[in-house]
Length: 287
Image (cartoon, rainbow, N blue to C red; front, side):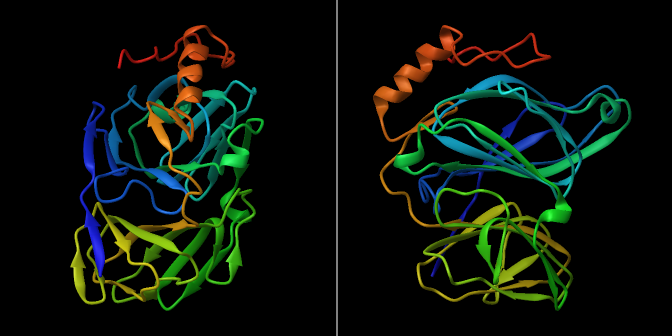
């Protein structure tokens, strides 16, 4: 048995939609993943683009992966990095970091598209307060597997006999999948919790059609086969279950409600630091 989840759609303007599949009523988390967002696909006219003003995080790592487009990351550590398709941006928030995400100026000058996924990984309770870090991994440094019309890129953790160089804090399963028509892929069974998000294309799992832009959560210990009827873009994710329940409020994740209250106060009082090159910020929501 599997569970199919239709994500909630958020329209951010200019035709840019973000679909959130986790958390949901059917899945509060999958492995360590507590947020699963599908960005786009969207096409921006010249002068338009993504503008996510500086905002804070604690207790998690953000993972950004693109199939098209570019995003310029800046953070309070002084990190500055443009991510392009096939790369991975992994930002460990730990005890606290703030960052911005914007379309680079040279890309914004022309008509451009963006399509990708951003996920949040809850850090183990023993690592929730680690020092913040930012790491960028280019596409060429990630394990790539090609067989039978399938191209797999191991974003983080272990899968299909390969291991990503991205530093993780618990057992993690995160793979970008591109399938040609009629290609089949056995879903790696080496992880306790597993899910598949279909970004684009007509896919089947064990012969049953899966709507694009939906998440499939597999039962523990089950075996499953993914088949592409058309070209398919998808992401596999999961890993070890969370070691304790997590509280989520805005951009904060923690095993402690009190810690989230402290993070709210820290953002209100400017204790997260300044993102170089930025003069704006997202204020703390009222609720």
